[in-house]
Image (cartoon, rainbow, N blue to C red; front, top):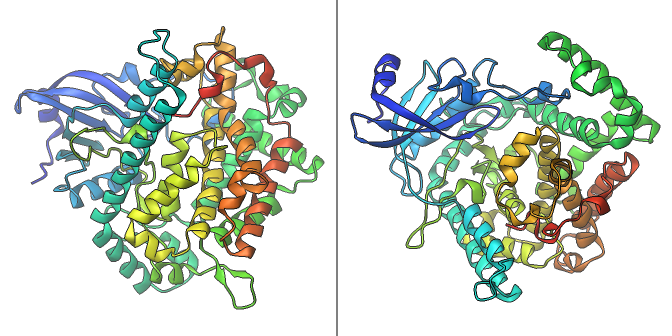
Length: 503
């Protein structure tokens, strides 16, 4: 049974905090449990209770992007993330691929779990990259051996997603029944919470706000032309310390970004509405009888099981490797009802940032063939692949806009030990390459699936869906090139540039 420990008892019971990770919403520590006499993991969503608050503070920001980053270590706790994660952990507490839940503290938004030994898949993939670049000839992997080893790991990672979907099948069915029963407006459906944990669909308002924020952040953080034209929005000296003043300045900046886009013949409101519409038709549209796609309503998507419980942040960084059996899946705070394309594209997004390879869609097919529920809901693989490509583009925009937010210390932490960054002679070079990596990914994705080898893999997709996908990709290409969201890359191509992000 899950204990709801008294905070004072918890402070006496857990000692020796060791920081494992941090994000804009939570902090994770390994700590010694003096009662159980073993190491456990503590995840805190609250800045008001932390064993070592000093570890959680970020450095000074020289731009306005943190205004859009949601909760921070000094803001109010994000209760929705906490209750989503605890709700799912309690439901899956007997699962073999979820870490055992030892206790929760709702008053302080703290989760205690078993400490599970093991390296993440991201570390195993990185080790393969390092061996491929080893200076020791006896240890160096040939390009063929490297890809064989990495593909084995990639397939193994996707097997974890197959099993996670198997184990959440009943929960997905429960979510579907609850949402269909609510049959009201689309907006009401989007706001409905299936469980007390809050695992439901994101509201239409939140989905819209997120996309708008990502696009605005992308232009603000990535457009060299906009930066040169609006220096008043950049630099430590121009950014107010007062949160209200920063917010007011950001509101001014947003208006200027929209004016800037309009000067490039991009009406921001129209762009967002069209972008969302195309995405919906690509992922879940069906033939209306005349050869055109009709976007399904949410009720229809739920009835056809096109929507299900998804992890929301699945990838090699959140799955522990075990050579004997399936490892442990971590971090469920993004769990929600959504499209399976989200988890598949995130898994492969984190495995590759260079998509000019047929292995990417082949791995999608590997998953599609193994997950019977997904295969039944999406019986055409080329159509499912088209949805994964569109979702991958959406994720690229999200992560690219987020990467613009990182300070040099954050970039150093994310790139430490990665062979792709060994050739960069300065922090500035490393920062630029890291922050623009996802833009480069988008640049390479578009021709691969429109005129390159990837285009042939979509030959079996519905004609209208393929046309919509090409239009969707063209919108992204136009945004990137019109606003000059590209760095002078020739200055930043170091020793490891060719392998950046492939593991």
